[in-house]
Structures are given as C-alpha cells and as structure tokens.
Image 1: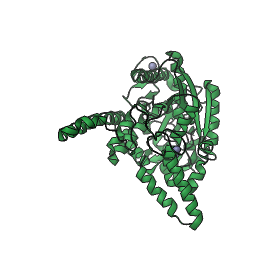
Image 2: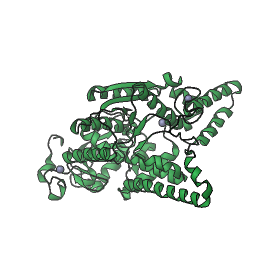
Image 3: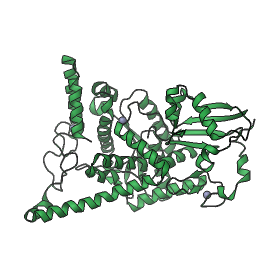
Image 4: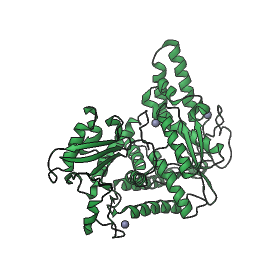
Length: 100
Length: 380
Ligand SMILES: [Zn+2]
Ligand SMILES: [Zn+2]
Ligand SMILES: [Zn+2]
C-alpha cells in the first residue's frame, strides 16, 4: 500500500465537490506503481461524477492545460507518466484554464 | 508516515542532469515551455521577471511618474501582473503609481468572491483600489443581461461592457493607461481565431502590445504578451500568491474555446508554437498592409493623393478620427468617447431594452433572436 496526497487546484476542484486535498491509497508495492496508475486511480476515485473525467483526462493522459507537479516539481522533469510513485509523494494538479 | 514536503529525500541524490541549467547549483523544478530550459525556483523567478521587464522597456510602455491602472479580476493573470509590476516598479525604479481597477459585473457568487480576492490583494500590494459596477454605469447586472439575451451571447456583452467600464473607471481616477493580464496563450488564441475567421484586419490589434481605441484617451497595454500561461500559474504557485480560480459562470465564446483546445493540442507537440503564432500574427499584418496600399496607388493614380487624406475605416465599421476634433465623437446617448454616433455599449443596451419590452409584450423569442443577429453584424 502506498499513501500519497493529491491536490486539485486552480479551479479543478469543481470536479471533486470543491475538495482540494485528497488522501489517496494505492494498491501495490513501492517501485511497482507509476504515475499512469495514479492518474487512472484518481480519475476513478477522486472525481465525483464520471462524466467529468474528460475535464481531467484526455487522450489517455492528463489533459493539456492542467499543470502537474510532483512534490512541487514540474512533472516534465520527473518522467511524466513513467514516474515511479513513492509513499508520501504530493501530486498537484492545477488548471491553467480557469478564471484568467 | 513522513511527509515529503518536510523531508526532500529526492534532493539528496540529485543527478547532474536534474540541476538548474542556469546556476548549475540547485535542483531544477520546472521546464520552460518557451525553450525547454530547466530552471530552479530562484532562477525561474528572475528570468520570468526580467523578461517582462525587457518587454516593458523595449516597447517603452511606461513613462516615469505615470499613473497606471491594473485591470484586476482577482484571477491568476491579473494577480500575478499586480505582483510583478510592484516588484519591477521598485527594482527598476519605473516611478509608476499603480492602482487596482476592478469591475463588478453583477454576477452572483462568482464576482462577489473574486472581488474579495482583489480586496485582499489591495492590502497585500498596498495599492489603491477602485471598483466600478455595471449597475452604476449601465443600470444592468450581468445576471439580468444573461437572463434577457441568453447565455450564448453573454461574452459579447462581457467584452464590450467590460472594456468601457475599465475606461470609465480609469477616467474617474484620472488615469490614461490601463494594463491587463492578457498572456501569450491568449494572444495566440486570438491570432488563431482571426486566422480561422479570415479576419486579417483584426490581426493587427490582437498582436500589438499597446492599443488605443480611436478617439479614446485611454491606452491599453499587455505586459504579459510574451508570458506563457504555464509560467504565470507556476509563478503564482511558487510565490503563494492569493488568487481566485473559479470559472466565470458564463462560459467563454464557443469559438474561442475551440481555438484554445486546438492551441493546447499544438502546444503539447510543439511548446514554442505559442510564440511562433504570435510572431506570425505580427508579421502577417505588415505584409498585407503594404500590398493594399501599393495596388490601390497603382490602380488609381489620380486618387492616390486624396487617398492619404481619407479616413481609415476600422474593422468594426467605425471611423478613426484624425487630429481634428469632429462632431459625433462622443456618444449621443451617454457621452462616452466613440467614433460612431452611438457607442457600442449603448447599442447593446438599447437592443436589450427592446428585447425586454418585446418579450414582455408578446412573449415571443423574436426579440432575443433579432438581438443575436445584431450582435453578429457588429462582430466584436
Ligand atoms: Zn538556478
Ligand atoms: Zn465572459
Ligand atoms: Zn453610449
């Protein structure tokens, strides 16, 4: 079991009932779970209404326009979907599209 | 269970490839979409701020002692703009007097919360704050406009009424310069929309950093013209700026949404495309202008001389005023500066009144439908 924190910021919390911080537990051992698994898990468990999943996921990955940080670092520097998740990680998803 | 925020365990095993490409000392935290450079937090702040300073100085946006109003919505762009302008004004001694200028459109829930954010910004940045409301200017709330004209054209109203409200707010404060938080993504979106619509005439304004409506004493400028949305959001995040991020209840124009999607898709493949589109937009216009003048002069030699004296017609059908003051350069209804007899806001509001009256008489949809048509013709 891997315990991590997931944040929905920048207005993205509209798809999670206005809740910005989520404690997420992933099945599996450390070293086996990737960012890709986390994204799928988050889509299934954090997003309240399945119809809102396209707001978060597009073409099998996080939708363009959502900024992803892993432990406050741009996920583009951390291998994106291939990043190997560790316990205690913080994943921040911020919409860059809302409310200019 | 240990929290990673307190214990940066990954920082202890930094590979050289994970270091900042500028200082080579700290761990890179972000990758710039503009050039794919990897930077640490400190270098990112400095580079981001310095680029905006360079944009400001090379376009000669400000004059020493100038009073400048920041169009503040409480959203990320204008909040970062206020923060950065305060920083740069102090660092480089611009000598500006910065004021926050907010519009209260009258959107229940949405605007109340965002104005609360602006009021906190006023404290945080120690700036004067002026709020102008649609109700006092137009005697309409945005919510009323939408219930009358329908949600689909709401952003057309937003665009026209907001612009005029900012101008009037600035005039009230005796300010002749309004800066807005429009960023590179917004600019590229607008360029794309104009290209897709074949609206070459409007490409010019969508790309210029400084604009001024014909006859208006108020300048508009966009210091974030070359700043990416991603970096603005990152800056706000790392600086822990206080911004409001709920979407406006009234969705943006459908076509803009489509252009935005297209741009996001392109950007995912080629992040520099935002800059490239802006660059293209700037240069299309220059080439096209030359061609028109040339063919006009070649074809009609005799009239070439008088053509210089003729009035330039704006894309909205209004006429640009030359140096001489002419009759009709203020709106007959409200006195606002306009190049038409009646300003755009008054045209819209008159349409609204008519549609409200019509709807109450026979309860038909005709009024709203007709108004929709008028709006299309005006095409803002
Ligand atoms: Zn650095
Ligand atoms: Zn709007
Ligand atoms: Zn008027």
